[in-house]
Length: 267
Image (cartoon, rainbow, N blue to C red; front, side, top):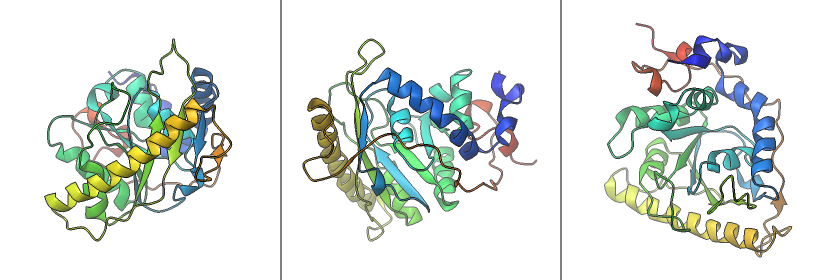
């Protein structure tokens, strides 16, 4: 049962995920910093402030979406596994801030359609490119979804390297996030070959950024990286986010509802 939606919590934010994130991100930042004290972000100014884009990041722990979110100057719509968004309270909270579900291991056309809607509407799409958390201390092979969406929609990719490996509630180690420069894949063909080539480009850059993040965490979070990229604290909320006029989105299963009941298609 959809408890928070049935209680009308989403109405407090006018069913607007960006307004919801604007209101709650301060608390998310406090909790995240308490769980991983001494953490830092680098290259925050490389995040494109407006317009459609795809954010591609590696993935180690359940804390990663929070880290990416608090070190980003804008909100993002994450592709998240269906099992997570089906959880009471937690899943609903994530959906209220713009997460939508994807079924792993199958060709999920609904998730791809939703991802295209996000970028076609001018928003930032967040994708953890490996599709699942990695357990060996370094980024794993990456799927083609991020590159495919960017190439099809003609939008840039902003890569992000995250070092949160071995973080846990019992091991509250400092973690680092490093943003990279935008990657333009629009010259690649819109086919399997182009998607694989684009993925290889993004994968190499994320691996480089992850190495920078790991080095920063290992050396006590210096004020700048060896290439001069400056350190940043978490990005405080701004009141300049555009208010959304979101179109309806068709769905039949509440667990896959991307943005809340008010976005169901009129039948």
